[in-house]
Length: 479
Image (cartoon, rainbow, N blue to C red; front, side):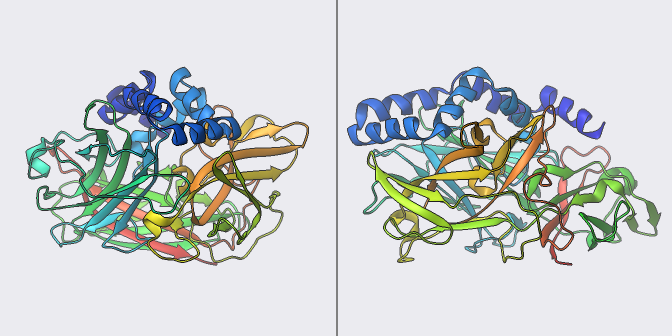
């Protein structure tokens, strides 16, 4: 019922989703112009794009989803506006969106208010010519719906007019692209309040339909969070689940009704399809909300993420079976996967990717793109679909990330255009009519798995116009 209410709220109230859904339903004018430019303005890129469309079903599925409103795409996009910390491209030519916190890779996208900390945002445009891009900042509440604040309430400067003017052309790559990057806050745009921020990126000629979106949060710490994770849960003991217990200490926060005003959100491995919201405390102590033995905070334990590396166009690296050069594109074939039957220890990065090449030099512009082929050898799983999942697919259960089943080879298949680097991934199964991915059929659930848990605590005081982020804690649990 919690999800149903949230789903209904998103469909009816989310201005953020409305813009995105409008862009998808109308076929994205930005994408239309870019696609025309690819075909008419660049012979080399047109041949490559044609090769990708013919050799990799990922582009065909994405375009079909945009035009036809794919049931799976629609289901997941309906929750997109409540998916914090998700970087999403809405057009095929925008790739490899990244956020780095204070110049460090792998950090949670959360910075401290007024501290001088910053978010570096970057992306690639797979076109040969320069395109003027601008960005627009939206302040969002805990559920990632647009807040009631005006632009001047949460930022300085004029919103939506700033051009992303820092870019570099790729060097010695088969796939030509421009690498754009910018930083927030900056000299023009100071961010004045805590909470969630969504940055929509636009073609300068179309300020209605974003080509990409990036999310991060700003924290003003006013509550403490004590968190404990255990494999001894209320439904099983050291088997297939992990359970979170936590206490929110609000002694230094001014609040008249903490049980209603404080909004905790809990995630596992930055997955927002399985996030937990609208929690009720188990009991109250003086200046404390205690959440213990709460079945909503029991997560499937999963397994360690699978990994591979594409570092060189000439030599297969970790878990790459073979490489080819066809139709002016590099192809990488990952070793055939099978469903995991046992716990597999590995030092994964919980779904992240790191862009780098064999020389580890100027990685952002000297790393090439590969059509990367994945295969999961298994009988077809009934009553649902299988998805390739991780940061490499924006952590979204979109139709473009759905694997096709090859009846002749008895295997699931998918091809994805990826930049050289080190990647984590897993296969998630989604039952018909559901929106949460399951690890049990493909990865297994094992209590030993190392998982990353995050708790966000928002505060909406009585009569307040927005949700402040007043607490945040992240921890890695290993049994």
